[in-house]
Image (cartoon, rainbow, N blue to C red; front, top):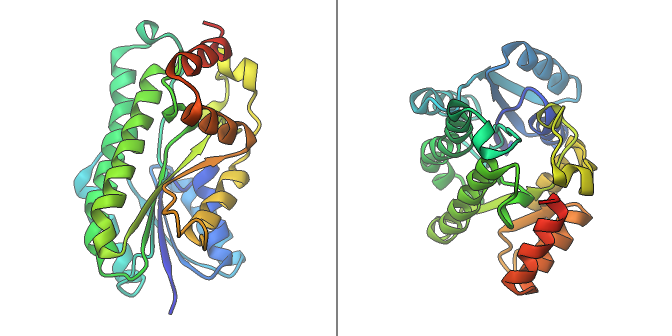
Length: 263
């Protein structure tokens, strides 16, 4: 039995690193992105590590294209969708009122609507595949709203909420729904980003760090399965922030975030 994984935003960064790790584990890897040149490089690299690539253009804001690409991939993968990874995303940093409205709206289209489109189109295939898993890329900014990342942070709160809700709803079908909470990752997405929290916390994580944690979460055994873990903070800093927010009073969590942001 050959398992399959479908990854949005797969041409570069976290998506690419994740695709290669799953390829090394023998998965049929679906890599989809608007960067078609990057996908051709990815396909060659997947083949080089012994994997089976299926790549194609995908604009996640287009629900019809999402449905078509998923249907094509599942057919190519022998009718299976073991892992669906909603990775495609945008990050626009700066003071809320200084970012053009159309930039905010584009971020919402990709980070929110793109995830909804992926979840909706993937469900029938996940349901028919025993032990299937959805991985949504959220962020440590889903722990508490982040200054200079207000809109981005809000989109990740959406991802957090829909992950929690669907893990409850889809459990009856044997589908796990989880999300990843990294802090800043050293990829093209954060190139040139300078905020209070990048200054105080730095940009310490790599795409490989996130990819390794995604694979570990998908393949999670006990005790994570026993406690039905849904959220996976990535890195020491994110884990400390998540733990602190869980047990700190609201005023202290706000104060810590205010100090980290330099607001």
